[in-house]
Image (cartoon, rainbow over all chains, first blue to last red; front, side):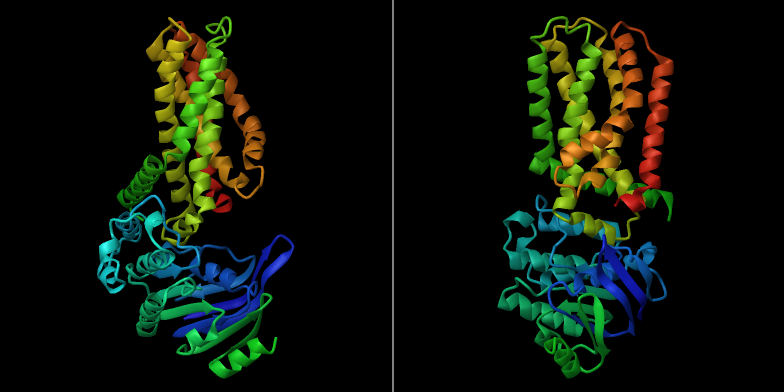
Length: 213
Length: 216
């Protein structure tokens, strides 16, 4: 269960998020146009950013404060968070040692077996994103956060990632500005200029509230 | 968290940093070229022996700024720092690992350029003792750069800002370091000076770890 209470994040004078409150479980889609605050929300949930005010709890723990909670969170953002100079294998080995978990089976599912000895800088954008997804999934996460994870992917990779998301057995937070990709989700959050404009279970209402703005 | 696990994590980050540096050579090449060029230019000046401690510290200081900060700043430029922050690592562990890997990098460069300087300047003093004292002097220099580099990371003129922030932090240790290097060159081990440098390094390293949550 993810619980956010009056969550705000300010960068200087500008509010990226303004008093967001919701509690959700299952597969959660986060919609919003560019600059709506999706990435900021996702980074706070992943423990990358500290909220300026308010509270966020995942499984009753604060992500920024609990190492044990972060050990169970897999995160993929538009930035792959991989070392370009290292090979796919070296990157995945590094993270699996840091997380002390390594489900290498996911490497085959994502079609990366032949690419293990390639440096990240030698891979196409689609494969880099697959490696980023493998990094997030190989730790057997209980919470999987995907921020615009489908952007830049070729059709085949999109299919693979969408299937993984639909089959994922845990809490999924999927942030996207292409709402048709997230129709399978259980609940929907719509953000507009840092404010929560819709939270509920209706995909149609979420899409309408986004289109109306 | 258990101690051996902490050490294991530090070792993994340091290993990764060394591997990244060995492949990219982004910092080490920059540092070596800068250091050798500066040493070469100083070798033409008169009375190098008299000002040896100042010259070698100047070379080490600017070489460390040129390259030592780059290795940490690259984590910010490529946003890989977010991967570390999202991981189970604590900010203090990330900071400690970065301090250590930067120290290893600066020490390696020091070990390479010190004999070059000694040869270029045609010096006849105590080589080993001078090198040993220089190693102690490098610890607070490298530590201060690692502490301040993330603070300057988001600024446009970050190298200049880093230098401006670094000078007041590093100044108290430069004078005793120069004195200790001068004494070591003539074969005297300046215990008081070295103890001061070690204590100052301790303060810088402790500050980095204590402030890591705010810095990163």
